[in-house]
Length: 194
Image 1: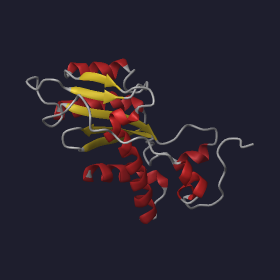
Image 2 (image 1 turned 90 degrees about the horizontal axis):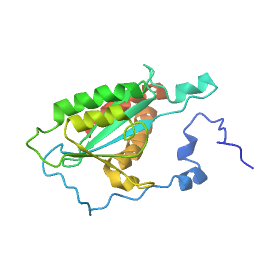
Image 3 (image 1 turned 30 degrees about the vertical axis):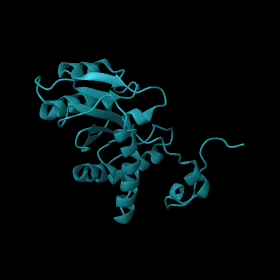
């Protein structure tokens, strides 16, 4: 019987080499082309998601594998459905999300003359079920559309980007011989180029 994750003693990224780990890395279904919501100008159609780079564990020395140099443990990712451009920010905690989303919408949201603005969120507690974040989106006249259960393809553009970001960060950090604490800088570099 297996009790939790196997403990690897190697320093290299074993999860990217182990045949069993690679086989278990299943991908979600791709976003479809049949949607009732179509963005016709930049920024009335958005998708947002929140990602945590690691969980708090009892062994503090393990936190170096997911905590950034300034204490970052998560990031928020936003996608523009019209242009396909990504925006994001690494955060120390989820408290910074409301401030960043408000700043993002102040900068990019089209005015009230653009009808049918919408944002797609999964039903997690960090975004969709957070009353403060819902209030920010509604104050900018966005309809909030939740994805269905186990239907990440409904926010596929943003959800699929997590896998690309994960692979890009591994490549950047490994290629530059930097440890995992530099992930927020790799994330910012990736976002600026995409």
